[in-house]
Structure formats: C-alpha cells, structure tokens
Image (cartoon, rainbow, N blue to C red; front, side, top):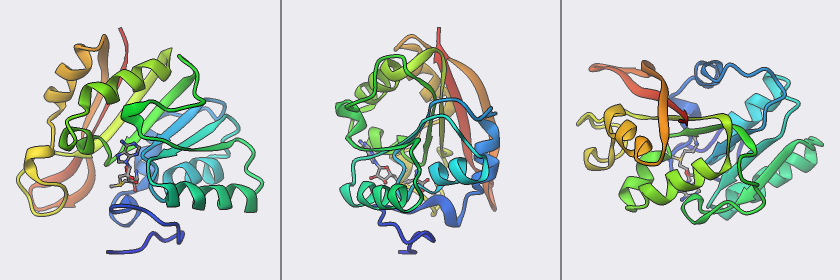
Length: 200
Ligand SMILES: C[S@@+](CC[C@H](N)C(=O)[O-])C[C@H]1O[C@@H](n2cnc3c(N)ncnc32)[C@H](O)[C@@H]1O
C-alpha cells in the first residue's frame, strides 16, 4: 500500500495519490472563518491543506477512528502551532465527543461513507452528522460512483447519489448540490461524485 506523502499513519488508502485535493476543497467555497470538519481524515492531508494553503482561521476538526492517524495529527499540530486544528479520535457512528450540537459549518468526508454501508451503520452516521451541523451548515460527501470497476471498494458497498439522497431525506436533510464529474479519470469516466446535504 502506498504510504501517505506526509508520512502520517493511515488505515486504508490516502486519496492524496489519486484525487486532487484542491478540486475537492474548491467545492466547499470556504471563506476562511468557518468551522470545518474533515471526518474520516486518515492522514489528514485535506485538513492540513485547508489550514496551510487556504489560510483557514476557523476551527478545523480532524476526526478518525484510527488512533495512530490522530496521534500523527497531534504531532503535526504541535510542530506547527496549529491552534485552530482540533484532532479527535472517534467512531463517527457512535458520536463525536467534544463537538456541540449544531456547531459545524461544513463536514467533508472523502472516501469514507461507503464504510458505513459496509458496517451497516448508515443511519447512525447520518444522525451524528446531522447533530453536529449548523442549521445552515452542509455535509459534503465525496465517494466512488456505484460502478463495478476494479479500483475502489467492492460494488456492493458503494452508493449512488440517489441512494444517499433517499437516506439523508429520511433524516430530515435535503440535497443542495451534486457534482458527478469529479475525481480520477478512469476509462468509464470520472471515478467519483460529490454530493452536499443541508437541514430542511
Ligand atoms: C479510505 S480512508 C480515507 C481517508 C481520507 N479521507 C482520504 O481521503 O485520504 C477512510 C478513513 O475513514 C476512517 N473511518 C472509517 N470508519 C470510520 C468511523 N466509523 N469513524 C471515524 N473514522 C472512520 C478510517 O480510519 C480511514 O482513515
């Protein structure tokens, strides 16, 4: 498995090697002061890029269930005096401690959501994301298209944008944005979609 470029320990693949972080972050239309969460941050490269390259002054939460990833993010925080970076080791489906209700402007999840389908914890994940986002906040999910292609997770754990829309609608959230032309170029087209939800 290819190691993350920043040397951080990560469970699963870091998307840094095959997805363009700037293409993803530009979708969030950040102003610099929002409270942002990189949920399932892995090596944290998206959180770090927002912090460093977008000169973000608001809080950035980096959340992952893998203790080593969060340890490495803590080392980064100390080495770089990144006071607005808050690293939390947590299983999103069981609740993210220390994050208040309706306190986050933007949640970003890159290549994470299919894992909740695999673990049959979709409802728990959406409930927790819904709890933490502000009334005018948004949840941005980028994941592999539900295609039967060799690269990426098994087809049966992938979801289509329509599947996710039905799921989020059942939790009182509405689709506000969909981009199906994003990600890596593969023979079938672009590998990913990015969908955003907000409170109804
Ligand atoms: C494929 S990696 C993607 C990492 C990063 N978002 C990226 O794009 O490189 C999936 C990450 O989600 C984390 N993860 C999986 N299930 C989780 C859960 N229930 N709660 C928190 N993190 C989770 C894994 O530990 C892993 O770091």
